[in-house]
Image 1: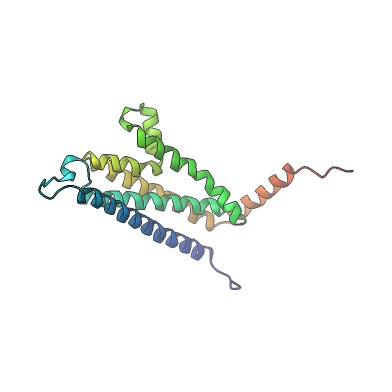
Image 2: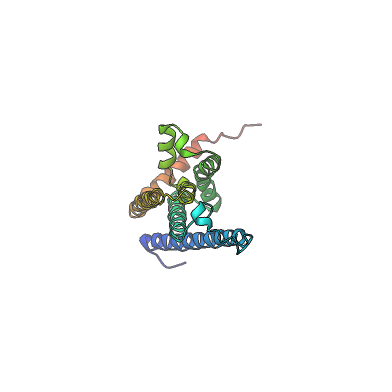
Length: 200
């Protein structure tokens, strides 16, 4: 900790850890999802010989792969966005407060798409949901169940492009003094907003 460390080395360390965490999260989710589907299929008698994937009740092998990639890209984009927001924080609490602004973008589309068919929504609302990268895993899971594999592919490409843009912005910020400048400005705003103590 006493040795000077290059900023880009810190950035690459954060991004590398984000990639590892995203991969572990996606893998853990897919293992749990596969176990759940296996338990459901285990309830069907072997004499019935019913293929749930053909009935649209279970994803195919390609569907599992696309869903896992969609989750990985989405988690990676969320972590990359968290890195750029937490870079402006001064401590852990500040970083948690900044990252908290991402939560509505994650939970609101997820809960809405659980009960609403995106194809039934107006064009403007659909465009807004498609523009949010965190809504694509839910969209992909529904599309895969219906045998639509193009929608998850487009979502993966969009999520990857979004992540690359975020990483580029992070690299540009770490290469300059903009983070320090913004922190100093935020300190100035907080000092100006603080009320002086009242005299007794």
